[in-house]
Length: 121
Image 1 (cartoon, rainbow, N blue to C red):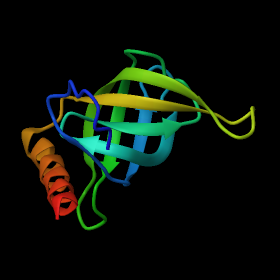
Image 2 (cartoon, one colour; image 1 turned 90 degrees about the vertical axis):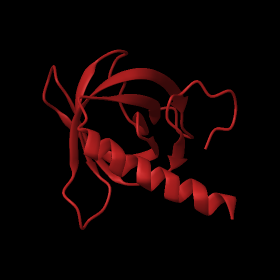
Image 3 (cartoon, rainbow, N blue to C red; image 1 turned 120 degrees about the vertical axis):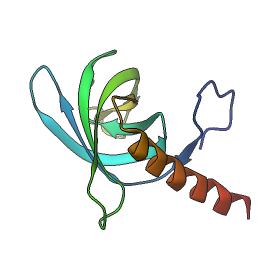
Image 4 (cartoon, rainbow, N blue to C red; image 1 turned 135 degrees about the horizontal axis):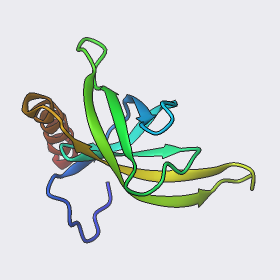
């Protein structure tokens, strides 16, 4: 987890879980894993630039024993990263949750708190 100056309202924790991101303009779904997660949003590393402030639909699979969390999102930052091969460009992408149900936000908060508590020990 980035420990620099943090302007986020919600703490983040490194947590890998499956996620589906659907760009609203073309309905193409990208399946990947989260890099980190917080009650306010997620960070993912993907092969395309979704575009700043683009609306997306998010399907987050926190636990295989629970149904996925579905909500809207907005791309709030994108950082282009070069991989070992020049043809393998990746985009570190931050997505803010929009229209997330309070109980789903609480589930995410609980997971983040558990992870952060374990880190302290």
